[in-house]
Image (tube, rainbow, N blue to C red; front, side, top):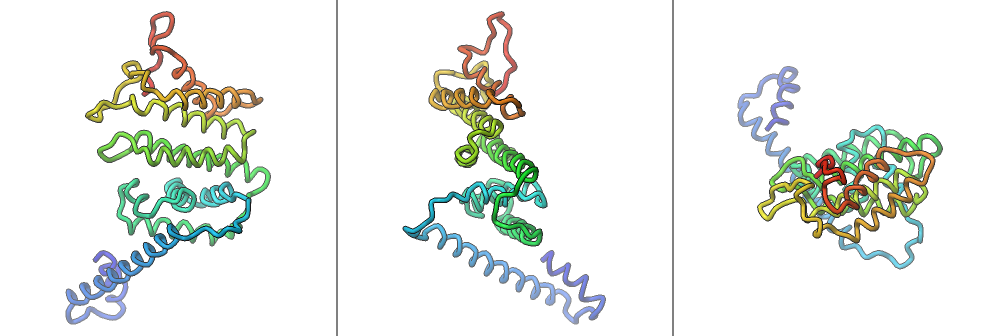
Length: 275
């Protein structure tokens, strides 16, 4: 109906008010609704077809995940569009799943993703890794997007649940892919370590009723020691480089908390109560 009213404000001053304004608005609104429903139905069919598509046996050995991540994190897009497009194109989530994560209608998210694709196309981007300084700049954006996805999964900004494990797992999966292709990058290693060390506390962060449990009150026996050990080794590797970035430093802090037997320092003073 909003689109019908918008059309009326454009057409009526030039063409005159119709004899039945109400009927005109209802007709236009109905047509727009039908167009939207057809578009959504076609998109769902395409997504379902892609999900069930059989992968051919002659797929090349090259992995284009990093290239696709760089493309989805194009600087012409907003952070929200970068995140949504990354989850759709790289993470494999459906538009409906992403819409639920952002608490917006599916049609709204579909339009957002479509506009993001159009902006990338209009910018003339090619499916290849950028070079030099541009690659370094875009890599920082890629890491920031993965950081945002993990944060939304670890501490949901809205909804009834404190965290969304599906988004946290997806961020970790994508971070592992980036790290596999750029193992020497300290910040890539630091971000993956930070995710693992933080995610290791997920079972202890909430009560059975879903209430938040502060760090100094958490049952540390429920922390995932496998993730902590892996994250700690990654922290050591990331700190070996000549330059330290924010993800490496955050990971080092997380490793310190994970290594402590209690939330108290030897002096009896408490550490900063991160949760």
